[in-house]
Length: 240
Image (tube, rainbow, N blue to C red):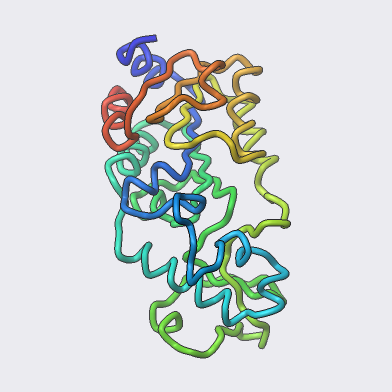
């Protein structure tokens, strides 16, 4: 499949779906969660992103996540985010599945978004489940954030050991897709990567955009090597 072929497939799709991963966020300047030298204050992020870590030392976990929020606020959506948002605006039926938690897709204008791993820029009550947008003033305070009900709030992300609550919704959407775009993901994180396989089994054309080959390359009808911010505006430019 050539880039022109991929553009035509995406433009003609009635139920196009996209899956984005950490590579798209990295192009905005954000470090990937499992990137080289991935330490924070001599701690592995994976050690802090768990319910057990939060229960043991919520102040430490909140310090880590407030640092991550500073990074998100210091950067911005890139051309890939904006291209996907423009495609959605021009193409009814498009759904975006993302593994990213920075909220950049929504910031760029995407609305039909399934955030598999939650949203870093949300505070969620650990008692009643109420959510509210993150506030830089609360993040700058020393006190731990608390809900109106009195419960301790936590970042609105899915931690290791917790279920990916929206994966069945993502699989259902993938199973109805006639074109499935995979962008900026190593396709090594499950169950998210399997959404592309669900779409393929259902007959969708799978199009991959990534700097390197991934475990999904073998099932892709078209695989294009490069950064999402460089390639997606062209591939999605044929939206009707």
